Amino acid sequence: MPGVINYDFLLSITLFLTAYASIFYITPYFVQAYREIPDQYAQEMRYLEHVTLNTPGSPRNWTDVSSMTSFGLAAYYNQTLPGVIDPEKAMAINNTNCTMLARKAGLTENEIMIRIEWAGKTVQCTPGTSLTGTRRHILRTVSVGNQTGVVEEWVW
Image 1: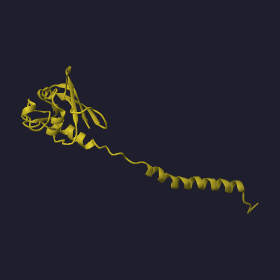
Image 2: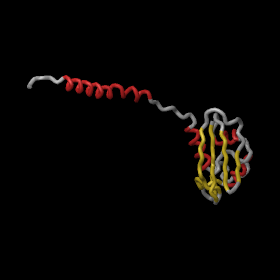
Image 3: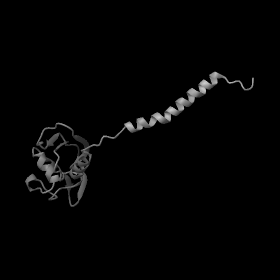
Image 4: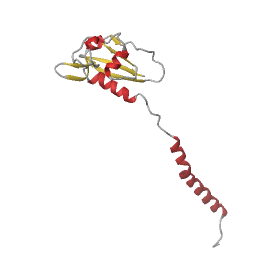
């Protein structure tokens, strides 16, 4: 019959419109609830990685920590070889104070630790404080001289 309203049809339209509208009104609350937690050590970690792997330090061919004026482990053979660590520089930092290395790298307010493993050797500096609290860690495969090695670095 024309003009007869089916109540089941009206109920289904009402439920559909309610569900459809709730998607647009409820969704922004979920979007606003998400926020990114800033990483307080990300910038320092990128800087330490750059200094360690891409700069030779000063003087460029240092092999004794006491003669070094700025920190860097990249090999220098008439030119800087980014990503290639000088094995003599790696051996020179073994058991040295990591805080002193951090200051010579330009990190004035952070503690660091560096560990290098290659060809069955492991060298690392001695941290000034224990590795407690929030910290950032990176593990990178590199060349140490002409051999493959691994560099681990921490900043806290």
